Image (cartoon, rainbow, N blue to C red; front, top):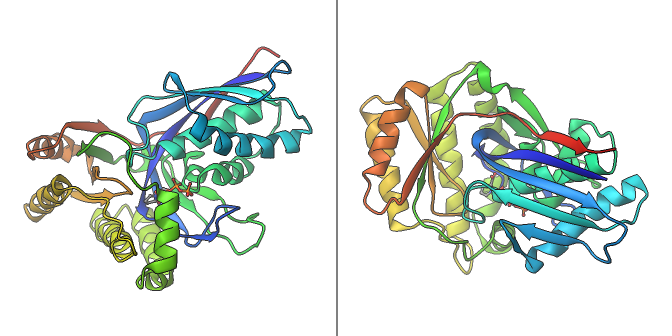
Length: 327
Ligand code: 2P0
């Protein structure tokens, strides 16, 4: 009863921010993302009757504070399989954990993929997406590669709240240049940030109300491979999400000064005709999305911004990959 899985991080171009149901992790809004090729979580799950409790090792050390969330996700799959056996989970990210680089997305997608395989459950990608959502809302999207849409759904039980592929990575190969502006885990996790925005930001209702229009525009831009139009809606969605978060009480300021300097660098490039736009999640790192021919120029420009610690470039990648070991 052992399996491994690899799932990749994703970044949203039309953002997810806010929940309709916090317990079931049903998002208040749909979202559209791209899956990144070079940022992944590798996770091994081994169910073992000799274990008295679940165990978690993340990036080489035990993480008791994360264990409850992992166990809760495993419980859903144990219930489905009709077993009570505890598991040892060993997971490793090949990129910084908890720093606004979507480690919970790749982590929970890999966890669900490996646990389902270890239990011998034959789940459809849609079912895997629903289970991954219960771990972390954005993880529902990392089950798929390329361009992905997450549906908020209408059902109270979350049964229609899952992600679906929109377009394969190779059908429109974009590049993503990530500028690392700070290391270390963020102060306010996205779950808490969302709850605070829902409860106290005067802009939150407007954010939710405008989402269908942004989703429709991004969907159309992706179908038409219209970079300019995707750039416009993605930057708008990012800034609107941060505006809602900034207006929460107490405020959520995820950016550093260097983040703003990176925004300016991207805007300068675009004004000069370089096909690039930015997006930023619940952390200080800026992600610049560009056509492949602009990748080197964008990476060089961001590396020159004072305070940028590191620049990583990646293409778009595939969805969840799972391997069962033994039986
Ligand atoms: C996104 N983020 O769409 C948005 C943009 C962060 C900013 O999805 O509470 O870690 O586990 O559902 O999945 C991060 O949210 O939150 C996220 P939970 P998650 O990528």
